Length: 78
Length: 78
Image (cartoon, rainbow over all chains, first blue to last red; front, side):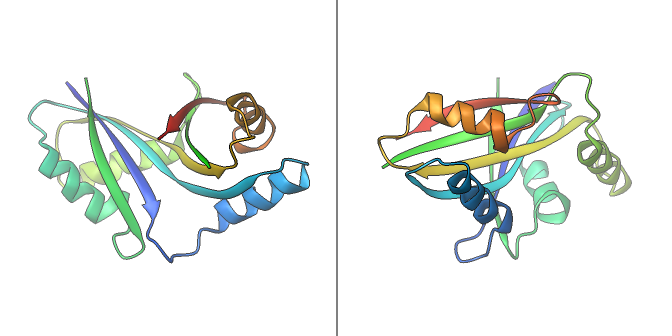
């Protein structure tokens, strides 16, 4: 069994409404010094050893991320 | 300026519909050997140096995560 972690983030220049709203809400709650908040997806996958990192990359491109507006990074977990 | 990364995941036993649906969809696309998919949030924050990790923890408890159903981990980025 292999474990992978995938980080999906909005591409540079793509509007991230959840991040912007969270930043403003933190300001309204009285927190100061918050310059930027970005919210993406954190995906954890448990797969058989037969599944390669190239397979994971393909799954991200086809389903787990939207490559038009999102970047993704794949990391292996021990 | 300090950067923090926050990983928000569903607590053990809490249903993660996005993860379950993604796992099934990957199966329908013909991928085999996918045992589990969990989808959480990946939050990146840029804050002033005056903001401490304890502040970030408080922000997670109050706004960024729902401590009743979600766990969160905070990491510092250099």
